[in-house]
Image 1 (cartoon, rainbow, N blue to C red):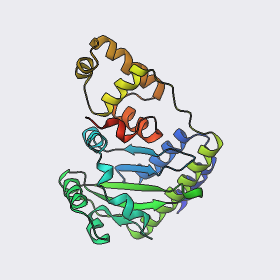
Image 2: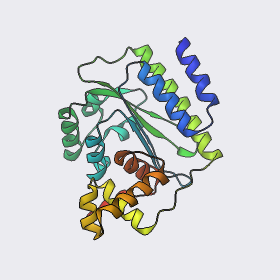
Image 3: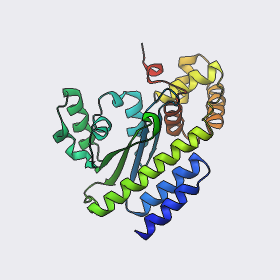
Image 4: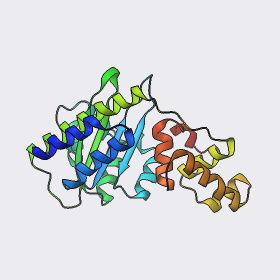
Length: 242
């Protein structure tokens, strides 16, 4: 495990959450992982945090706008499992509702392929779910590699908790219009549609969205939605359409 030892030292010495994410992504991608999903649970001290890599934008937007977190059983199953399991094994892990089963059928039909699910644990119940997708038609990595993945993810999660405690995430201030535009972006609406909904010009929407991207430190709509929801800047109920 020479490569993982190097990664663990890199994780130990990172100075920011962005550097941590890049370090962990580089490690997983170098070992054949195509998709990475990290869902940190909310606590009294910290909002929920969501980060993804490799998932198609349309799937991420669908997951967010249609509140699939409410019916996706895999993160909850991971929290009560002592070992990683495959996404395709979720049905065998406990009683599931019809909505849970419908989500799993949609996941199987999505073409995302299979992946690994497991939980990582931190102080003061600052726990998280990790999903590692290895692609359509590819075999699960060997057991010793899976154990290494879990070890790296666990140390990365603890480092994330440490960095958050040291330098709590400061939410950017958005104007009323910027926030409204962001909510429509998170619902998957185009700028032209947002202009109609907000009764303003497309040029004004372009300006609002560009300002939101700058304040969030992102370059695309999917990343803006994920960061806003993951940081607590937006809540899922903000996206409920009357």
